[in-house]
Length: 300
Ligand code: PAF
Image (tube, rainbow, N blue to C red; front, side):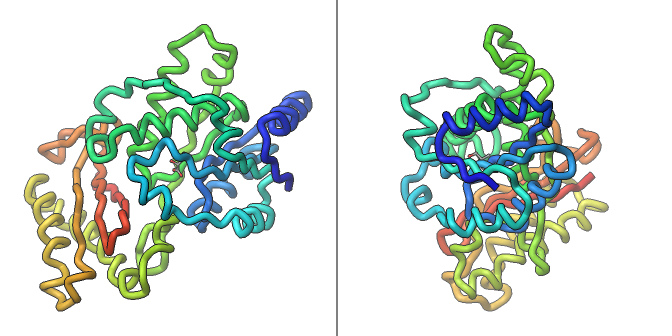
């Protein structure tokens, strides 16, 4: 595996691969890799000749300075994991290498960005789109892999592709037309907690409580057989908010749900009746001991 730190080296590697007609799979990550990332890499390996994994904590997608500072960074461990899981290239740029000049692009994602994470994290999706576009332009992948834990992020990248395909006068238009977005299922720990780099910040006690987020979502799916959307939504919020009291758990280990929405899986707009959409998912964000945890479940 090659560890590449500069754009110039990356471009040379990509152009050599293109000359040999190799297909390229891109797995964008912010590092602190876990089994969830590895599942994306394995999928990319199955489907492409060359797998490029980027490891870059993208400062412009953090709207909270403390979150950026506390984001786990383990580049050496990450590179060892990438090597043993068959990645061909680890692209590990510095901030200056990625952004030699400030990028001020502003994207209009429309309604998919107006719900859930959108209002909670202003500027976040714009920052994600800027870095993903930069990676697409540099790596020119045939396929790009994203985990469904960040369900809304996938809808944003899909929208970014639509935007790029509609702007016909840029050099990479053909690449954008052909680029396939490959969403991959959430990987969970045995106890059900969705794997996330942020889980490393949970204490042992908080880590023991955290799987109850997914357990609550699973119960919500059972409830949806006979209850209305609004009642299921309210039940999830109430159950998590009162979880520590009902289960005699110390106050500091309480769940603080930020939102729980039941949405159409394509438009991401909240539904009011189960039959309002063909595909229905529930998306949740919960704070636990200052760590922001995200999860989702499919209802229909
Ligand atoms: O999902 C992530 O880890 C990040 O948002 C991504 C896609 C790597 C962009 O920085």
